[in-house]
Image (cartoon, rainbow over all chains, first blue to last red; front, side, top):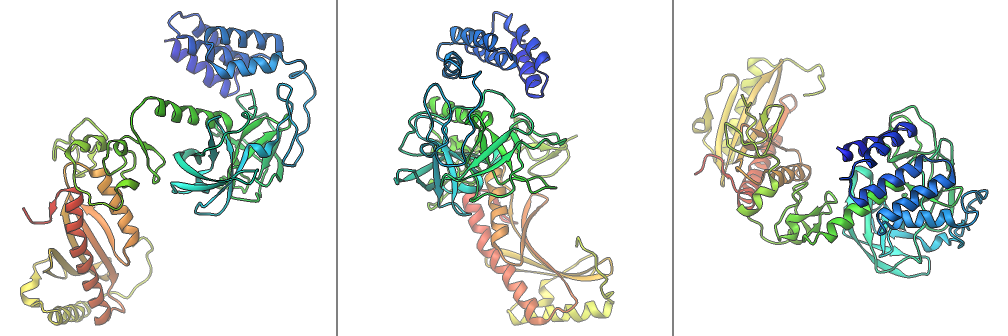
Length: 361
Length: 154
C-alpha cells in the first residue's frame, strides 16, 4: 500500500503536480512498513517539491538519517550546506571544454568527464562518466551492436571499452573502461528540466552547441528532454549541461516525426539504468552481454546459445556448433499457459497461439 | 501484392503457355513434369524433391493477374526454442536474395512469387533452382540447430 502511494506521488510530481505528489508521499511516509531506503527516496522526492532551501535541507537531513548509505542524499545535502551554493546566482557555463561550474567549492574540468567513443557503426560519438568505477554512457546509435569500442580520454589515453549493457528503447549504452573520473559531475536536482531552460550539448572535443529546453504540447515520456538543438558535431552521446553547470542528460540524435530537433535523455533515466545494471551485477547471477538487444543475458551466463530476451545468438556461441538444449527451453518460453491445440508454451497473442496460430477457445 | 497496378489480364491460353515453359524447365533439370504434376484447384502445380527439400511450383491467377509461385516447406516448427528460431528466420530473411521465409500452419516455408507477365524460361529456371538450393541448404541447418523435424519426415 505505501509503495503504491509513493509511486503515485512520484508520478504526480513527474507530471508536474508537485503539491498533489507531496501530499501522496507524506501519506506513504506515515506507514511504518516503508523500508528505510524507500523512506529516504520518498524524502528526497519531497525535497524536490520544496522551494525553500531550509525545508529542502530538512528533508535531505531526514533522508540521510533514514538511509545513511544513500550517497545521493548525502551529496545533495552537502551541496545545500555549502555556503551560497543554492542561493548564489548561477554561473554561466562557458561553451568550452572547461566550464567552471560551482560544485561544493570545486570547479569542474568537463574534459575530464567526456570521452570520444570510436568504432561504432555510424562514426565517432561522445560519452561521459556516469559512475566512479569507469562506466561511460553514450547512445545506442553511437555504439551500435558492438561489444568493444575504443574510448579516447582527454589526456590522450586510448582505452578499450567493453559494452556491458544497452537500453535500445532509451537509446542508451553503458561502456566499461579501466579509468575513473576524479568525481562525478553534479546532476540537476529537479526531476524535469524547466521550460526554455538554456542547455549546452557538449562534444568530446570540448566544443558545445547551445540550445534550450523546447516546450512542446506533445505528451512525452518523462525521460525525454525536447531541445532546440538541430545540429551536432558528432553522432551524439555527449553530456547536456544546464546554465548552473549541472548535468541534465545526454544529447541524442533522436527526433520526432514532425521536426528536426534533437531529444536528450534525462540524467534520471540514465541513473536508473546504471543502478539497474549495477544491481544485476551485484546479484551474483552470471550474465553475458547480448549485443543484438543490449540485455544482460542469464542464458549466456549459463553457457546457452541464445539470448532469452531477443533470441539472438550470443557472441560466445556464434562460431560453434549449436543444438537444442532442453534445459534452456524454459528461458525462451514467454507464457506459462500452454496452447490447447499444440501444447506449446510459446505464448498466446490475441487468443492465438504464437507457435501454431490456432485460436484458443 | 500491396501495390495494385493495372496488369494484363491472364487468359487460359497464357497460363497454358507458361505451364509448358515450366514443364520444359523441369525436363531440363531431370524432372518428369507428368510425374511431378499436382492436382490443384486452379491453375497448374508441380512438386519434386531437391536434396532433402520438397519444391512446389504453382502457376495461378489472383485477381486477374497470373503469378508464378515457387516455394518449399522446410521444417515443422519445434515445440520449444521458438524465440531463437523466429529471430534466426528474420535474420536469414534479410540475407537471402529474391526469396522470403515465412510460416504457415506450423511449417516454415521459403517462398518466391512474381507475376507471369514478362517471365522467360531462363528466369523461371533460375527461380526454381534458387528456391531449391535455399531449401536444401536451410532445412537441415534449422533442424540441427533448433529441433523440430524436416517437413514430411519422421
